Length: 162
Image 1 (cartoon, rainbow, N blue to C red):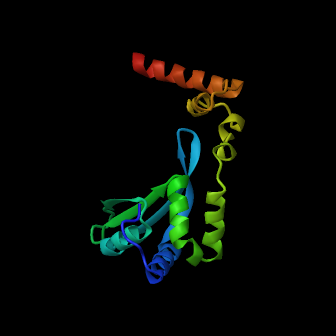
Image 2: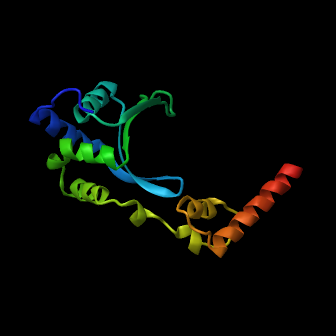
């Protein structure tokens, strides 16, 4: 929720920062894809100003990298259609073509359209991901996903017995 009313200059500044440093992507959680916006920087004051202007998301970090003389990175992340919609209201009109197109893709998101069924077509490997995803959608697991889970459970039991 926005706790102050950002000016047009604030919103344009935030959009410019996001154009240069930010990204939209899909975050996979429990076999489903969700819209996600991310911005990372080594300047915490800049990140906090951005977060205050857009009014959504959360700041994580700092993360430290090697070599040790590099500055720590902090990340701003907003996940889910509600947060992406609010972000679009604040900075959407100021984004360039590429980011505007990606934002439009995010805003047209519907859970059923973003289900990935890659695991149903992959070679038979020990995994429970496909089986779990089917169950999460209230579906009966397909034969390939059921067999992959059986292989996975067999390996798990064998390792546990040792």
